Length: 275
Ligand SMILES: NC(=O)C1=CN([C@@H]2O[C@H](COP(=O)(O)OP(=O)(O)OC[C@H]3O[C@@H](n4cnc5c(N)ncnc54)[C@H](OP(=O)(O)O)[C@@H]3O)[C@@H](O)[C@H]2O)C=CC1
Ligand SMILES: Nc1nc(=O)c2c([nH]1)NC[C@@H]1CN(c3ccc(C(=O)N[C@@H](CCC(=O)O)C(=O)O)cc3)C=[N+]21
Image (cartoon, rainbow, N blue to C red; front, top):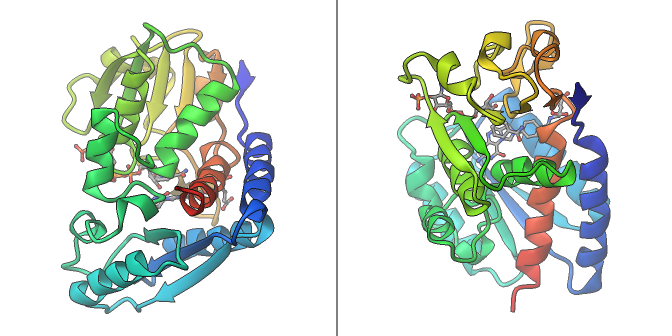
């Protein structure tokens, strides 16, 4: 079994991004936050740190956990109109009553570096240029980096969220995989997932995917980042058990996560260089 780590790939993407970011005017990413959620704030801090490392300016726009949806929408509109800002993301979770999907409609698609605007998802589905969500792009980057063949292969995605499952299904389809998307209402999940040559888990359910879910030799990508009681992080895949069946498997931490952050920054540098 091969462990598909993301750390070296992320470092390579960051190095390339640093070169792109320093070639022209400094790219600027605005991160809009309206949460007190620990995981959300951890991710925001890690974005800020990584941005500093590649020469991208990162503005945290903290509206507080009680921000009203109108204020969040106005902020996204203002940042989208600001010529000094090249990338805009809205961190989740949001205050009760605020819809991330609805609000992300206020992010200019040209600055939508995490593919959150429904227009971006529509363009992706239509095969038009758009930034895919960084996480979905990270899964593709890992598959490409490890030269996993997709043409005509059976790919199964577990999870149908707008952030991961749905956009990823489109990206895999574009690469000519035969794609099946599973979710919480899927009957006999293991029967479906065990047909996959490429299996992606993005459910937020620690250990959901066990050896019975995986075909011998399959490539398994674990998107899940689930907090453990001891303050650590674990995936949706039972790593040790599945390692005995899979041909290749991404670890958590050290798999999709670092590549996600690196690609968010790459998207920001590219947004700054759009004609
Ligand atoms: N590493 C990274 O960069 C990132 C990691 N993540 C992680 O990925 C995971 C998924 O995130 P996200 O997509 O936002 O989560 P959501 O909660 O939005 O979606 C989860 C999806 O999994 C499905 N699901 C839940 N339970 C089951 C089950 N028992 N069997 C089959 N399907 C199930 C849900 O089905 P239904 O639609 O029916 O409810 C839903 O489609 C989380 O752990 C998150 O932290 C997310 C983004 C980035
Ligand atoms: N619209 C949206 N886009 C996201 O990209 C998004 C989101 N919503 N909601 C929350 C999740 C979570 N997320 C992570 C990204 C990187 C790591 C990461 O780099 N983790 C390190 C480990 C960190 C540790 O060890 O604590 C790793 O996996 O190696 C984790 C989690 C992005 N998310």
